[in-house]
Amino acid sequence: MINEQRLIDQLKIHEGVKLKPYHCTAHKLTIGVGRNLDDVGISESEAEYLLQNDIDKCLEKAMSYSWFKDAPELVREAVVNLIFNLGFAKFNTFKLTIGHLERQEYELAGAELLNSRYAEQVGRRAVEVANQIAECQQ
Image 1 (tube, helix red, strand yellow):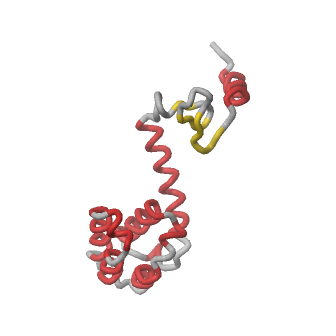
Image 2 (cartoon, rainbow, N blue to C red; image 1 turned 45 degrees about the vertical axis):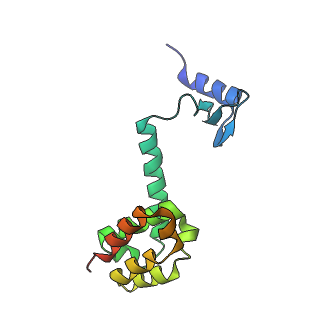
């Protein structure tokens, strides 16, 4: 057996802990404690773990809207999807869409979302999210 904690501590000292991607001395894209993303990548379970953390952060941001918790489930999911894709600061600039969401005008919110540069940039994704909102009934 090995002393796993001692090994972890040693690897952290030798490799460092980097929370953003960087290129190591072998010019490989790396993150964390020496994780070689070019050659090793991440596993499906690691991707799911990261995704869940990101969803949790987006959900926390979405909860800052007073109307969010009472919105239909599909609207809440669409808003989290938008925050995930755009970032909270950028989503917050969608004043007309957010106003419609607040007033439970879901068809107008969906239409307004489609009338944006975002919709031009992401195409089908925007159509799906806008329709998900527009088709909701309170």
